[in-house]
Length: 356
Image (cartoon, rainbow, N blue to C red; front, side):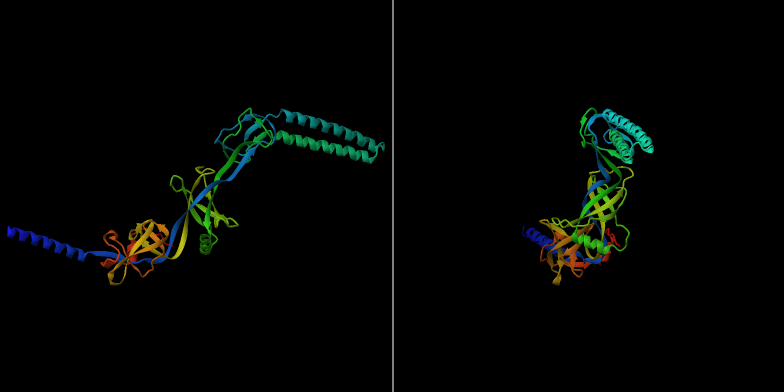
């Protein structure tokens, strides 16, 4: 029994000694932040608008005699869309034409008398004025009659029909809206610091190319360009609106959609670390910094931008710091470790990093 107990104690002691030796010889991988110029992609919520989106309203009152289109239909410029009962306006035009004819006859008779000095020149001028007035009223009647045919002012897509055939239409009533979706204007808001950075980094007059992330998280097939910036900042939000123009040959985009603009932003002297070198505690990012005597200290960092596999650090680190790259869950604050150092360029080379 004594011999057996001795063997167990010896076995336990040897195992413990080997475990401590293994723990003492564990080496961690350490690197440093990399300072370099790079390009990040910033995402901005946007609103998608047609380059032309107008309301089609009745310009004359009457009954809606005909509806020649359906909702969502593509139409061509000049195509008949709606017809308001024209009989009243046809009658007004006939009356105006008759009055014009009478004024022409009166003008001719007055001219004959004026040539014979039977009537004065003033009477001839008065007859001419009556003729011109009659012609003007005739032209106005033609315009009113033309307003009973509502046609498309440009190629576009019909929206919801607000009134159906047979409805009584008032002057100015909304019938539908028409959208020209050949190109789309996409608006997104940029903060004042980002606006200043954009203007500073704009090296040429070439427009900035951007991409559109649609609501289904797919990138729109055609890139757009930033064409214009609004003239004033919004004092309440501190933002200014940018407008990008996107071609829409397949008519996939529609007026009123939402999405996100993906805009490349050039960063000078960005401090970059791998995402795997960070850990999250209570919605804050931390890294382990290796200090004097190889003691690790848990330190909070502020992230200014995020890329695939990488973070751009705003505050909390400098390029000379040594940070723990792997094994973050195996150490605690103030632990002493042994480590191998890997050059940050070699670490970043294995990750995805867009460069200028």
